[in-house]
Image (cartoon, rainbow, N blue to C red):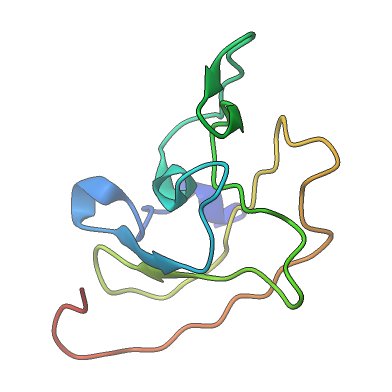
Length: 108
């Protein structure tokens, strides 16, 4: 297989995947991380916190780093991760790191 994106999405919400925790959700909620499909832009749409964004957006000026915990919907081997920062201008991460572990049962 040449492209991991042709494989099943182990974190898909329809399989039970979820973002369990995030350190900050000031501008946009963590649930935006697992939405299927391409991100969208909504011109002129705002929330009580600012411009509506299709993704997870933090305050950006934390003293360390932002983080989240994602529960996969089904077990499997992670072959790749998509980090899409479309429409985030000046407020996207320069890099990220991914860590994984196996836990018996269903963490919530």
